[in-house]
Length: 459
Image (cartoon, rainbow, N blue to C red; front, side):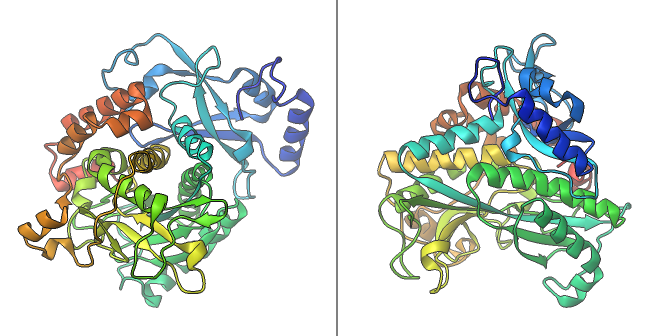
């Protein structure tokens, strides 16, 4: 929903706002929590009382331009023109995505978009990046579906894991059953369909998988899903960490992203057989993502501890390659079962982690896919083994490369990426780089214990 003005025929009218406020009040809502995710990956919130909703829709809420360069540790990078105490933005809730409260809190929720004081989209609005990417594809007659797998660590107030495994076991699940059931109910009550929930491999680690949605809704639901996870955890005496590596020796939390492209109701990721690759635009999309991944790594694995997680033999996708159902490949083609192949075939990008801004991650990857289609990129042969077990010669011949092993190296690749500039826009590209460079300078000398402690509760 765009900002409302008196001359905008599509704006929300005062009577409509009053009706909405009345419905929310009847349901027990007292205020609206509005969120955006910054370039540090932190979800920021503004809360307004319901009686101010009409004014907020008309004029927005003020916010400093400096938030374009806000970091994970609440520092601000020096990137002109955003590193200034002057200047103001207006942020507006998108009421098309509003979720009423569910009885556990008097707050309703909606995502924010950022605008100038002239009510033009702000060049560093992360949600607008994704909206623009979706619109570019829609102009080509193609729509995408996206879904996240959300991994997190459930910990007590002292940071001890809520379970000790075994991974995927019934015994570990029973230790956290009341929390798990309450969380699934809370997610469902807010329109987030959980396809499955399970105990993951690491101590205290859990995962829920979301049903496919359009990309903007999928990113919104990830943000809301994390908020709900924290709320339910607090109600059960726990804390939650979405950090890529929440404590030393942890296997790490991914936020795997599944994507499928559709034209006229046909899934472009579908292959003729479970052993074959997609063809045409579907193959070019995957090839575009694969080719750009090394340059986009600082967007989808953007924190210093992201590179503690991004290790071989962890199913994290440490090598830039693709494979059919290969969980060690960065891009895993999921053909789907015989009964659902035409509808469920998709690609999973395994390198995305919990530090990533979901709007930028999906937007950048859709931009990479578009680049692949525009240049008619060819998909190389799949890698059907653990790429770390290949010899250097075998990897070279197959075009398989190891991703950057530090955020610093990933930043320098991102700085030179034309695909990233096209997807993010030059201003946001520079602001994002500034935040990441400052983050690297701040945390690069921390040992693992200090590093994981610094990031544990940030996302």
